[in-house]
Image (cartoon, rainbow, N blue to C red; front, side, top):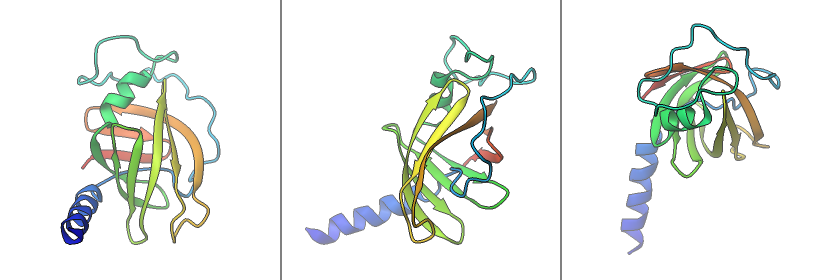
Length: 149
């Protein structure tokens, strides 16, 4: 009975390591609320409804864009893949460093993330929110670029 569970866990981990950005090393300091972006196009896959308070994406649109998908990400200091699970948890693989888990939530115009301690991230990272913009299969989160994995 133990072998099938271990095999399932390995298969899940391998499948989830195609995941994306979390400002694991705080590329940017705490960021102020995002500036309105006149050139922001709404996500065509997002539900019709209100935009965020600043004219950007609403929390519901951000959640729909990320939820249940793996995203490749690249920031000035790191790159990797993150799976954003529907339940607000995440699995993060940082290229050349390893994996960790995290939690995520959204606010109008922002993605908020925290990360658990890992060998390459001994203290973890507390919940931090960053500006979120873009559309389709490419988004910008803080200084990181996300593309659908």
